[in-house]
Length: 349
Image (cartoon, rainbow, N blue to C red; front, side):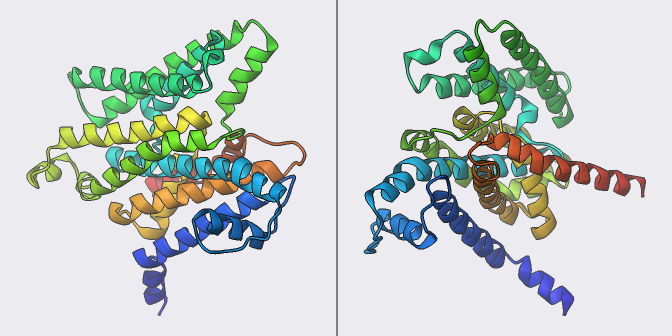
């Protein structure tokens, strides 16, 4: 009986259904709660009305403005960022065959941080509102390009070498960022840099949502198409090659898609850690290692996690608003420590 119930709760239909309901509920709650609270029924009616459903929301102009123009873009941007980090983390963990790996390990996050900090330090953000995310995205792509180029020409082109190259580049870029922070010319510049590095979704608009929606959603679909390949890679490179897979080409494609999504996410949210590390691990414990379920479930789980974390960041210390990256670290760090201790006990056993 217990085994049958466990199989039911871990079935793809149940997993996707529950996560989808949780995501929709969290979006409605996050769009309604804040300094100006809008009742759940009115918020839901406004969202359905925006989706062209024939619903009369009975909401005033103030509530409509708060939900549709202030909160909803922020919430949807958070859901997209969380989905990108979640599915990228799941694919990277499968690629490296290590549950303690996240997308930032190959230099994507640190490259985006370096690009954004350079834009803030040199005052380039005054040239346009989109220059900061553009600089972050460019930095992410350059960092991944350098890593892949060095890895391609390395005498030992293994996934371990790739991981070590990423760690080395992260250390180098962190040093560059620290130099720029130490030499900041004024307090406002320093606050802008620190604020971005902590990760946040404040003042996100429909323009930010449109900027990241297409690359993230397309990359999610394409990554899910590599679920079978990731399952084969879990069995080892030799087994994957004997099955007809072009291992090197598949690795490049998966890394490229994961980097594209992470770079797009970080470009509008700043550095947000632990989502791509903790969420895929928790989903894997629930559904098992099959990437046909793990990848889309990690995308949904990451979206739920970040939307809820952003809601907590706005509500827990009102009127003070915490950075969502700080909340993710507070939630994710204890879970990460638990994962490390559990894996250590398993290795000792």
